[in-house]
Amino acid sequence: MLALQKIEPAFGLVLRDVPPPVPGPGEVVIEVGATGVCGTDLHIYEWTPGYEAMASRMPVTIGHELAGTVAAVGPGVTGLAEGISVTARPSVVCGRCPACVAGNSDACAARTGIGITRNGGFARYVAVPAENCVSVPSNLDPEVAALTEPMTVSAEAVDTGEVRAGDRVLVLGPGSIGQGIALFAREAGAAEVVVVGRDDQFRLDRLRAMGFPDVIDLGERTLPEALASYLARGRFDVVIEATGVPAVVQQGLDVLRKRGVLVVCGIHPRPASVDLTRLVREHQQIRGSYRAPLSTWLRVVDFLTRHTELARQMITHRVALGDALAGFELARQKAASKLIVFPQA
Image (spheres, one colour):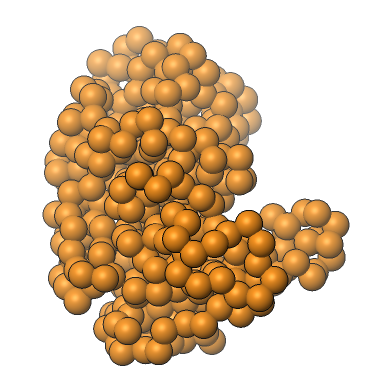
């Protein structure tokens, strides 16, 4: 079968012919219906800092935003059968380290990642632990079900910021994670959701189509300049950073109210500089947000089921696996917002 792989710690990805997987004990094989391209995949493609752990696992098939149907069931698996529609949680825990044995799997010392340090979804078939599978309705389009993982990241960021009814929320970064944050902030009852990007009109237009009129392209302006009309009514209650640009962290704090919360969910290639004295005097908080618990996955599946056509508007490009590299280039140039790859096409 064809697979999109990282084969060396350098720029680029390669389409290769590889044998299909066989499920091991506790595993299932998923026939992939659709896989999304995300910022992590682009970082792996460009080989930016932060993914060095992949080097010892290469070659590895990338892709973790996947959905499909169970095609084969390995020994010891219960509760799943062939034909069931699923998505997969990408974080795989060992189940043997002291943290896992103690029931604190989030602190697993031997965690691996589907599409990062073990084979992922840019192939027709992928083997995953059965416990990582999350069932989705059989009538939920695979391309929408493939949005589950990034939308859990968005929902977790909103939960981490404790967004409440009436809050004014600023989202920095209009990519797929930022778009999902806007959706879940609105779902949480935010009175105002403002999304900011830089030279990113294409993705900001996606947000307008989803019913968010308060979108801003910075261009050459500073953040306070671009937000002047909003800041005239006060600084924001919650700021959520989803850019991965270190300089943006302090900029977000600058427009955050006293005792407000800044949530950082972007993956940054280098440390960020923060004015800690000002943060202390403003009583502000910085909170990191990353993977979501299973309960959030179930809530996101429900959201996607209820708002399928709204979520589908996030998808701007669809390509077959054989054309995936051209699609990656579109995403790198911000000419595509959410790109979906169909491995079976």
